[in-house]
Length: 318
Picture 1: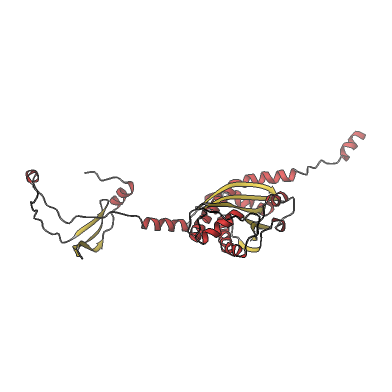
Picture 2 (picture 1 turned 45 degrees about the vertical axis):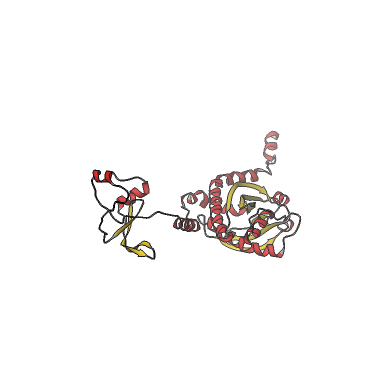
């Protein structure tokens, strides 16, 4: 009986790390969809920065990791540009981090630089001018961040404050796990790093939405990129051909032709303008100044067969 009593009264074993391991396992199941969201964010942000900075921009997502809040703050350098904000209805505070080298590249590119001669910001505070220049870029970045999360739900951004010293940027308890998403960004010759910090406790309530496959099923439409592609295509060069006349002669007459011979031909009433063999316009020919010109009177629609041939790059059979 004593043995049974001893077993019944023995204290239950409790692992202080069991909760941490459980959380990490749950986040690992969400990682594919989280990575898709980060890819969306990288594409959206690249389009926004292209439009804002008018410079070549490359953004590469570098993965997701879980870090304790204490460890995260210890590894952040100073100075650094941190934006603390709420992402309602998520609980907790989310942080956007832009390192000093990326701040320098952004500020320089906004005022005509290309990063060939990088500005040394290390070991000094950001100037009021640099901080003011970053505000609009941060606002644009947060807009793209919420757009990237739209497949999961509608979120409202509320900016709380900006910090440049990690010691004053505490946004969770020391042991809380933080989901860190990193992005390497290059702007012309300048480069740097951007990261987002989301408390795991804030993401866990979205587990059902994120595991339902909704993120994978959403088709992304980057309107900025499509408009830029449309503008680039509109500026591409194309060769137009117009046949001003046509005559028929025998092979013997062709062989007998010599310099100085004159062709007699009728001037057609209308001229068809082609591109790549596809008829595009019909008009009348004449002169414009000292050059022969064509007055366009009608735009010709492409037939389905002609459109198929142009897209495939082939030609019609004789």
